[in-house]
Length: 106
Length: 119
Image 1 (cartoon, helix red, strand yellow):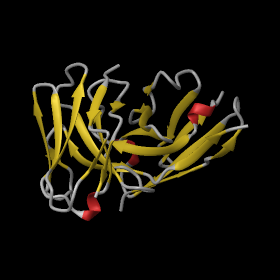
Image 2: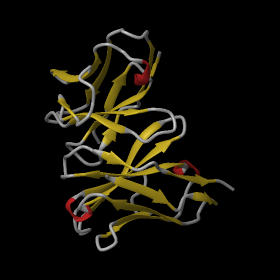
Image 3: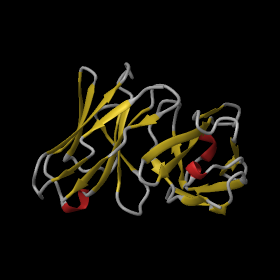
Image 4: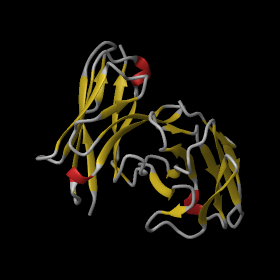
């Protein structure tokens, strides 16, 4: 199975900060890396798909990139509504696997 | 409006069985692969299973293989997950989600149904 190593496990930041979350795959996943946000008590929401594509309706302050085997989610200017847990997920190979999540506190 | 609504969760004893359902509306159900993903308390999201457009191909996580069966009724726009030989570690909120293709992301999710396995 593809292991997804996500870091950090949690972070605390202020409104307006730039936030980055990383995810490293244990093998090549051909860019099929997606990012989801889950706020408390709600269903996960798709933010970014296939490394860097913004899902419909997602604010442009969210972006995705890759450098070698490390995928990164960036929130350029953190807003209050961005609190929650963020997960990376690979869809290249079954079984699909998620990172362990990054809890973002404001 | 795209809607996915899970139901059927509840409390079940270890070794028991349960079937959860996901009723959908607002999109062409038969055009989408459908998935089950669970949120395990204190751990995070875990992918459980997926089924292709017409239900002929299903894939499972190793942790549920041989115990869970995913199926769909395209006439009723509904997805199912039959769970048997339930274990305490199957306790989770179970979400259904859709994907347009085999490697596509999960672009819409239901609100989830809680399954608690406990004696």
